[in-house]
Length: 326
Image 1: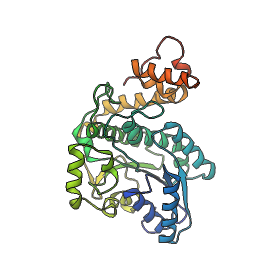
Image 2 (image 1 turned 180 degrees about the vertical axis):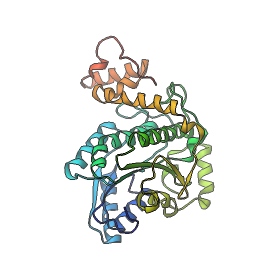
Image 3 (image 1 turned 45 degrees about the vertical axis):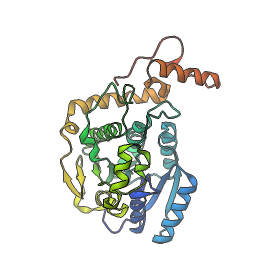
């Protein structure tokens, strides 16, 4: 994949209607790629699509609409992409979010974990065959330096015990890194590379999800933050530079390979997380309620029953499903 000429290359970018995701999508289009935007809002997505077409003169800018906090939507997104495309040369998992309080999605999942980790994991897994068929291909995961402030709490991944915005966000980004490294090992020899990055602290829409002291700190520091243009440079470097052709399983900041936290290299934790993820296929078949515990699961089940929604097989009857190792 050459840095300046991307004609014939198909790129999918999540979170591509604002901030560094929008800059990334625009610059890929400017270099001639077919760019598939992913937006939660159709109106915002269509506006961004039109803007990028006009700015670059590239009419090969497409739009798919999906709320990535809902895993069923992620499945539909992958299927919709594969319905129209046989190849995928670049997948940029850029979408991210932070929530000021613990928020459950419509599937009963904690939203920070769903958007920042589970969605990119699932989307990538569903598109892996397409990526392999397009080799050489690249996967770029946008992580955060916040990962270095936390460790994996397998009994509190969904904030069941306690929830704090930056801690849970950091844990999701640490999970993303652990997965990146393990995926790189498993993709060896396929021609598909996967790397992660810290974009820098960027003045974007991201702080809108914060509250309290963290929100005030972000507002006060905004004049000193990176612009979206600056924040997108490492993503674009990993996406297009010939200097990283064949490079995989690395963490980058300021377009340079850097060591991530020592916890992110713990293969035992990474393998445990991989085992947890393998159970997601059971969850996707039987319903995300499998992840909930005690009163939360019972409450969601009663709500579904009141609305006449059929319960997944694993949640029927008196017994609880076998708990996942979370």
